[in-house]
Length: 316
Image (cartoon, rainbow, N blue to C red):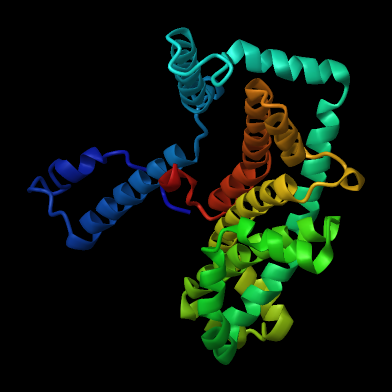
């Protein structure tokens, strides 16, 4: 524990017991300087560990997005007022809210959201298992990495909607087609994120793990995965985004009464009715669900990882 005693000692600056000038020894002087330096470092660490007040946190986190949303609504209302497009092509924000309210009164809105959300979460969890296993194999087995690494990177850049026709041919108009598109969209992102995280691990960590006997699955659990967590978490966030986008693309095209109605089908029904307020309401719901998952799940998880590693102050 560093010393915090920085009180000056008058005897050091005064005359000595024999009346002569104080002879300040080199080691004693250096010791006091070192104590002052340690006290200063302790003070800096204490200041960094303090949490900002709740009011300041809300002000810095909540107000900027609310201002941005307000500006978008004002611009949208002005475009409606000056008829940048005909009103049936560009309804006002009030018209879209009215369409949402109408669907809410029909008692169908939550069903649409739950159908898509449950598909998205289930598809993401399956992608998490497959992507993690694939990422570990690609990161640690050199021949597999040489063979599959470029393919994974290529698959990550392939639009998910491109898989929909193939999935329909393979599985027909079933839920299997939707989940196949979700998996093909999310698994490469999760695997690539884990590979990037493993690549960033200092070799000293791996050697230290092997020295203490953490090899095989124990090494993966206690050394590899914890050390690769920041990159892995970034891959999970990207995997969820790809999973949600892939799901919407699949639901727009794979449409059958037996599948239930998700947000993608809700959007498509609005297009078939040429009801722009309905369509914009569907887009708004898709956006809200995606942002909600990001704020409620991944943002707290990311803060926990950064805080546990002492990186939060530098990352925010």
